[in-house]
Length: 148
Image 1 (cartoon, one colour):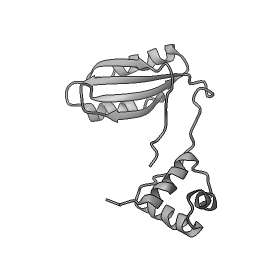
Image 2 (cartoon, helix red, strand yellow):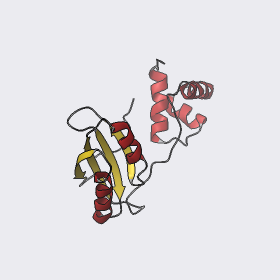
Image 3 (cartoon, helix red, strand yellow):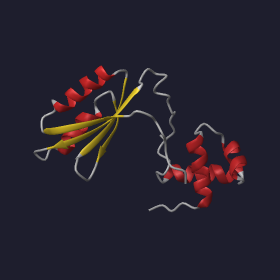
Image 4 (cartoon, helix red, strand yellow):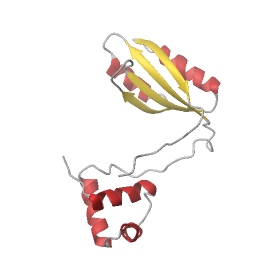
C-alpha cells in the first residue's frame, strides 16, 4: 500500500476543492514548492491515489432535482450480474455492493418522481431482484469527498 504524508494530504485537499488548479496555485495554498507539488502529484497519479480529474455538477441546474437511494435485495446468487445491469441504467449515479440487510445500494438522479417510478420498476423487473426500498432525499446536507 502506498503511504501518503501530511504534504500529500494538503495537495489532495486542494485538488478536492478544485481539480483545475495549477501546480503553482496548489503550491501557494499549501506552502510547498511548485516542483514538490508537481512531483507529488505525479507520484499520487502513478500509484493510483489520484485516478482522474472530474467536474462537480449541480444536478438541480441540469434538471435532475430528485435524488433517491434504492436498497436492493437479491436471490439466486446473481448479485454481480444484477450490479452490472444496475450500473448500465442511465439514472444510476453510483452502485454499491454492500454488507448488511441489503445486497446493493443505488444512488440515482431524476427529473421527476415519475422518472424515479420507471427506474424503480426497471430494477424490480431484473431477474433475481427480490425487493427494493427507495428513499427520496428531501434535502442535501453534504455531498462530496472527505477532507484529508
